[in-house]
Amino acid sequence: MSRVAVVTGGGSGVGRSIAVRLAADGHRVAIMDINADAAAEAAAEAQAQGDQAIGLRVDVADEDSVTAAFAEVRQGLGPVDILVTSAAISGFTRLDKITLEEWNRYLAVNLTGTFLSVRAALSDMVAAHWGRIVTISSAAGQRGAGRQAHYSATKGGVIAMTKSIAIDYASKGITANTVPPFVIDTPMLREQQEAGKLPPAEYLLQAIPAGRLGSGDDVAELCSYLCSDGAGYVTGQVIGVNGGAVL
Image 1 (cartoon, one colour):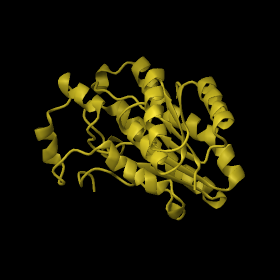
Image 2 (cartoon, helix red, strand yellow; image 1 turned 30 degrees about the vertical axis):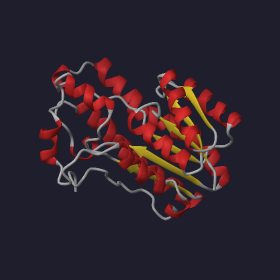
Image 3 (spheres, one colour; image 1 turned 45 degrees about the vertical axis):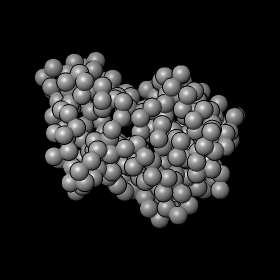
Image 4 (tube, helix red, strand yellow; image 1 turned 90 degrees about the vertical axis):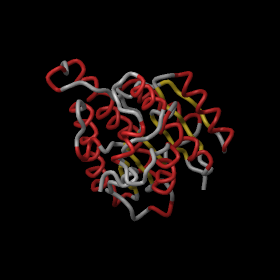
């Protein structure tokens, strides 16, 4: 059945893989990203895989931007049935070097951005008595990560918030689950390696029993299931895509 799916942060990396997979599943997909060109390119790729797809420039940390974007989705594609929140920022700063401005920026994008996106989609799901929400969190939110206190805190908040959403809306036919990846091979990962902020792949692999880095498709495969009719009894769960690195 074709439904309307919104993917935030869908212009690149994991979000783009998810958006393309949902399109291939037959859904009409709205791709939201801070980078308008990336959103448009991802929408073209998604549309080539399935039905309608649109790309929208959205700052998930800005309430007006989110509200306007969801209104545009409703006008162009219809009420929102599926939401995957992948928009996030990541970086490395030791706690004593994190400025309040940097801390607040991480909260605004990663945590408040997730909240605003979910809140914007919920009215459609409640009205339909059907909805699928998948938040992309992080293994850092489960166990912490060096020089990432700000990132880890926001992703831990996403995990807790998702569980609360699941409790509040299960009786309304809406599921909410979170997917915390570990190390996924994306352009952002490679940029951080080139900048010396992350070690090379051969070092990272020592922490992954599966013996390889994850891919965006690995995450998209799970999201495809969690967004399906068949996942109606799966809610409030933290399901890692990590090659066995976090148990």
